[in-house]
Each structure stands twice: as structure tokens, then as C-alpha cells.
Image (tube, rainbow, N blue to C red):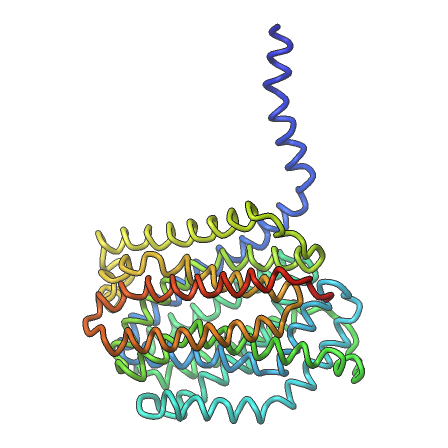
Length: 431
């Protein structure tokens, strides 16, 4: 009896051991990737603390909003051909040199459109609050310096070199943090001076990314290959612009309607919310790679709901922990952040819902449904614009404004869920 009992007790442990052994490679890759997310989280927090407490709240609002616009506009670079480069790295790595040449060619051709779109965004949202020189410098740093660094990260992740990508992510984020600390000790502080520090940090990251981390392959131009994938890339570029528009549109509206000071407080809160997404994006990236090879991965409802529940729980717990710390120690992140500290916990559901909308958009990319993804993101951007305009023009005090964001992001999540899973009933497209 004792032997039988021992055997029955050992069986569950044996099954667990077998399960882990079969997925040792996957676990190793995940922990390599998550180490980069952890390093980025630490240095992103240091960067945020240094910058948010060196610039005035109004100037921090200007920078954060211009940076958000720059991230959105950077998706125009190369007409979205980065998506083709990523798929190539994940599935046909021997063609990386060929597709890198295509990215460089299309990057140059996209510059006039990028410049025109940037000036249009400036006239609509920034003309009355941010000097054109400051806006242009920040968009230059985001679109032409930082976006290529992301290309190096994307290619390394596509190749499965998660450790190298993690190291690059940590180094690039650390350089931004170093730039913010140097700026903190500079004699004069203004958003214009900071933009030059920002350009320098991103330029250093770009040199390191392509000097030491990008795969060495011969560049070959094959126009016929690029033309075959250009339509899909343009869909991806449009979807990415719309994705970041719906993700960052709140900052643009707060600046345009509420002014720089409210934009600064709002940017501080949303930057803390953004930090909760760093580990989630690592998980999404690895899931996307698996779905490219196995589109039926999320065919079961239990798997879908389990993943979404986990994303929401981790995101919410992260902000709740931060809110508790700031409640008891409001100056923990500096004097400027202390002004927004009492408001952080009011946005308790925003990180989870926001991260879920981002995660759902990645599912359609993984399945090759790029046009549907672009249409969905356009609808979500329009809905967000309507909801936020209503909130910003009817809710006058800041605490209630932040509290109402939970309802706004809940409605966006419900709309995203309906659109995403309706689209996923259709067959995945080959990538």
C-alpha cells in the first residue's frame, strides 16, 4: 500500500517534470525576453523620475504629447515594411539582408510623406502650445533614430535571439535614462534643451543597435519581392498609425482641450500606466510568433479567456501596488509626480483594459489579417475620440476625469473584443 501510495503521489510531479522538460526551450526564451522587459522597466522608471522632476509639469506635458505623436508618425517610415522584415526574420532568416535593403529603400521614399504628416499633426494639435522646432526635433528622434533601433530589436526577436534583443533593449533604455540624468544636472532646463539630449541618447542607441546587434548579411535589392509584400506592409503601417492614434489620442486631446499643465499631469499618470505594459508586450510578442506558425493556437475559449484574465490581473496588480506606494509615500517618485500621485489609483482598471486592446490587435497581425486589423483600429480610434472629447468637455475636475477613464477604456475593450474575435472566426491568412 505504501509503495502504491508513493507511486500515485510521484505521478503528478513526474507529469509536471515532463511538461517543463518538453517546454524547456520555450521557458528559456521567455525568461531571456522577460529579462529585457525587467531591465527596461527599471531604466524606464529611472528615466521617467529624472525627466518628470526636471522639466516643469507643463513642459513635461509638451514633451510627452509630442513624443506620443512621434511614435505614431514613426509607423509611416518605410510604409510599414518593418512587418515584412519581422516575418522574414521569423520564417525565412536567410532573406534578412534582402529585406533590410528594401526597408532602407522604402524608408528614404517614405520621408516626404512622413514630413507632410508630421506638419499636419503639428498644425492640428500642437501649433498653439509647442514650438515647431521642439516638435520637429522630438519627431526626428522618435521616427528616424528610435524606430530603426526597434527594427534591430524586432529582427533579433524574430530570429529567436531573445537574449540579444533583451540586452539591446536594456542598453537603449539605459542610454535614455543616462541622458535624462545628465539633463537633470545641466545648468538650464527647458523642453528645447532636453530635445537635444533626447536626440543624442537615441542616436547613441542607433549606433549600438546596428554596430553590434544587427545580423550581418549582404544587402541585395529585389524589387519584385518588395512589391509583392508592399500592400500588406501598407495595411500594417496604416493599422500601426491608427493603433497608436487610438492609444495616444487621449494625450493629444488633453493638450488641445485642457492645456499643457493638465496634459503634464495626465502624461505622468499615463506614463505610470504604460510601465505596466512592458512585461505584457514581451508575452504578446512571443505569442504572436507562435501564432504565425500555428494560427489555431487560440481556438479554445478557455485559452482565450485565461490569457486575457491573466493580462488584466497582472496589469491591475502592478498599478494597484504603485498606487498604494504613492498613497503612503507621495514623494517617492519626486515632487512633480507627487502632484499626480493621489490620482494614480483612480485609474485602476485602465492598464488592464488598455493592455488587452493592444494584445487583441496583435492577434490579428499574427494571423495575417492586416486589413481587418487596420479597419478595426480605425473604428476604435474614432470611438476613443468621441468618448474622450465628451469626457474632457463635460467633466471639469481632474479626479473625476481620471475616474471616468475606466469607463472609457471598458467601452473600448468591449468594442475591440467584438471586432477582434468576430474577425478571428475567418481563416487565418498565410504569412
